[in-house]
Image 1 (cartoon, rainbow, N blue to C red):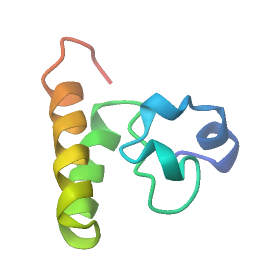
Image 2 (cartoon, rainbow, N blue to C red):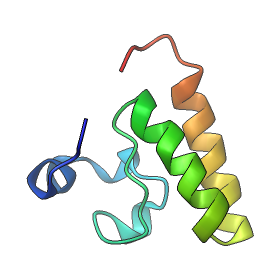
Image 3 (spheres, helix red, strand yellow):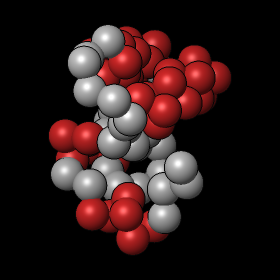
Image 4 (spheres, rainbow, N blue to C red):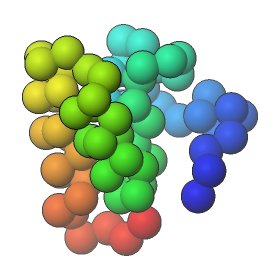
Length: 69
């Protein structure tokens, strides 16, 4: 599912890998499992080591939760 600009702006800051940048560029939105997996991939390529650790931890919580998405 593609995340439109309107939908991205509607997300809470807690749904981003880097909440301090939300909803802007480099914030890694994770409203569901698919976006969490994509965020991990982008973080591996573009995020700093400290950001990558936080993004991976958040994405792993989403990916391993019982919620579908």
